[in-house]
Length: 246
Image (cartoon, rainbow, N blue to C red; front, side, top):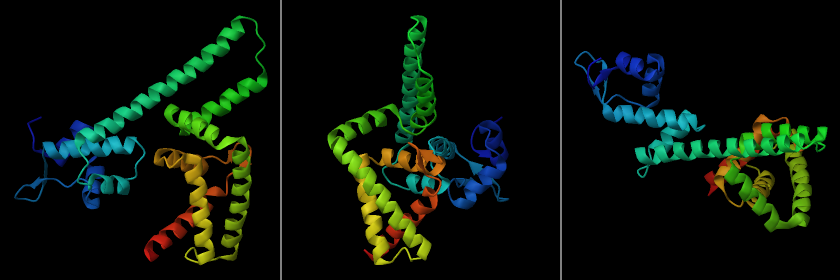
């Protein structure tokens, strides 16, 4: 295969990204070929290849195509910056694997020492492994621990009650069909975001992980969360309406 620039088929063959996907990226304005032949065929340069690598890296990090398009349009985003994002995620995954390994080695050591390991403890390991480690990085887990300690047990118990009350009020407005732009819903959305800010300490990464957990799990800490997705969308619409007014 010859040197760059490449036609779309050549780029697809070298990268493993299908021609159909490359055409779709072009339609979205996400990856537009830098040059075209006289006959109108796309020609991809080294800069396009770097752009494609950024897209693939960000997709691997969980960004949607629209989020990637907006992210890459920022003037301060560089190829090196995207690489650092992926490096950080890989380090988090390595740290998560090490944490899980240490936890299991501790259980294995107790087993070899003929110490009693309860069934409940194994269930807890499975639950924590499948849920918390699935959504939160080790760094985020440590930050959440520090956040809980800072708030104190009393405030955490009070916050649980606040959440239950708030969710009931939001659900009631949804059942009535209240417009998300209504002042009542706006106030509820403000309280919703306030509680999230208090819990996450304003860390957008933790907030995103929390949202993923509630979207993808049907139960969290014994609480039925199957209704959370439509509720979160409703609150999101209320927040978007508030921004339009501002």
